[in-house]
Structures are given as C-alpha cells and as structure tokens.
Length: 196
Image (cartoon, rainbow, N blue to C red; front, side, top):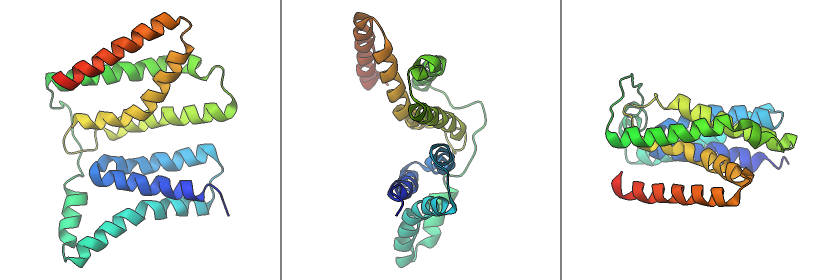
C-alpha cells in the first residue's frame, strides 16, 4: 500500500471541507494536484485519491440536504451564491487598504528573499519551499474569484508567510535586530486586534 495515500486523500478532503466555509479555497484543488506532481511522480491512482477526497465532504453534505429535501438550497448556498468574479475597482476601506499593504509587503519580502531562503537547503527542502511559493501564487490567483472582496481571503497567505518569515528570522545574523523586528511585529499584531 502506498504510504502517501492517506495524505493525498486528506489533502483533497480538507480542502473541500475548508471550501464549505470559504468557497474560493476549492480552487486550491488545482494547487494540490500540481504540488503532488512536484513532490512525486503522480499516477492515476493518486489523482483518483485526490478526487475522491475532494468529492467526499461535498457528497456527505449534499446527502444531508437531500435527506431533508433541500438539494436546491444546497446548490444555491454552496455553488451559486459563491461563484463570481469581482472586477476592479475593489471595494476599499482604510482597514482593507492597510491590511492589504501589510500582506503585500510580506509577500514581496518573501519573494525577494527567495535566494537566501533556498540557499542552504537540500533538493527535497527546495521542492517543498517551491511548493509554498506556488501556494502564494495560487492564493493570489483565486482572490478575484469571489462575489465580494472579503479581507479574510488574505488569511490564506498566512501558512506560507509564517514559514517564510520564520526562515528569514532564523537567517538574520544579528539576534538583537531579529528580536527588535519580532517585537515590532508583535506590536503590529496587537494594534491590529484593536483597530482593524
């Protein structure tokens, strides 16, 4: 038995579960397929495991709606209400602009630090880091595919940005500068909790 089978199924399953709460996440199934190709040679069985994992939660929720004769409600709430494409100009408030600037700054920082992040890494680690960069790209690509522009969509960047910022902090030679930057980030997080 393939030891990766559970992980492949779980990737599809949990992406679909997340799409129940924030629909644009469903587009990350494409990212999961590409990252599987990058990590290992993907066979038809792996594609099938990912597809079954992706369909399972949607099927189970549809079954509950079907049991209560609400399949039209499921179709409307899960698909129709969430499919859309927003065109510029995006609805903006000062909160959205400031948070977007912060996230954009950290994404740009991680992109500029690509060389230092991957410089002392082995080939397997480089593959995984490249997958995180692909993840950032896919998060950027799925932003317009939603009916509104909720700022919560920027939370999709957090896993990759957290890993990259940790690597950047570990690579800083002066520990005092790293501690000061960490304190500034902590203060920004606390300020954002009360004002945004």
